[in-house]
Image (cartoon, rainbow over all chains, first blue to last red; front, top):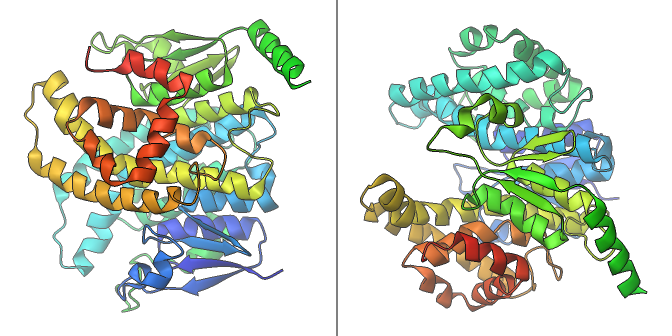
Length: 223
Length: 234
């Protein structure tokens, strides 16, 4: 079997969502490195793979996929379906619900915080403190729901580890590199314990090694 | 044989207690769930939430949806939130030989359903929904004027997205392949409002495969029925 190919830059939180799942699935894969600053994702050869011009994309034999969560689900369904629980109505619904909470509630809050606190300084943009403050407040309210959930459930979907955990890693990783992380997260002890357990997984440590806290800008290794 | 199997399935469904969906029929995320319930022929009850009266913040609703949003869903002692999670629960529960709208038993097909479901969320909806917000929601529900700059920028985004859909739908009858799926259903509510509640429905005229795909979907009984309740033109 030819190894699975994943296209993109490893510092991307969307790329690393798929990498964590590939690692958890013990998949044989290779990264096809691309340069964001070089505009590789907009070249015709890549648009033939993903017409939306975004990374990651995946090739497994004849199959070409894009959108990080679709890629992740494919990998898990193929190699580690227990992380999706699609054979169990209630469990699969809980996995799906918390995957979507990350996608529709947490990520839209963490992205502007990370962009303003980490990225903007490297790309000639000012930090918009109002945007940061507004989203930190939203984050605290949202984490109340996570805290309530994780006070009664070991993992997000229930008493089992699932894709719901893996999909949370990347954006939390970058939030952890901002000055707000400790004060915010310390107020939610169950959430904090859940997050630290996720960080201790070998798959996560391996992927995180490719995700410097400044996205590589500080060391000149711009994606 | 097929007819007997269909009758047996229909009877079984009718004997199951109705599931409950909480939220207004006009909500796009509620409609996402309703279209799936209609497609599988499930018995369901729609319980509206009194938004002006802050019904979505009351303890009974928060017990079902801790984010205070709609939809929420109940099937016996199963209580769910997040419209796509609810919709997939419905499609899995009522799945049969004849009705497999997620294709989770086939790796490639399921992956294509997932890809185009994600594309709706991250590419299609962000391009079309600001136009609906500016042309209908904000003026009608908040008394705000249309921000034409936002509309114009969104129309440019929408054209780029629709070009990609046009190429794709020139090769496949439906989004995930030659079979209708959850991926197509996810596009219903957003597209319906774009067509019904904005002056830009003729945008699709420039994309004949997309237009044909949409008209095909709207000919489905589920979408005709739900669209009648959602129309902003009455």
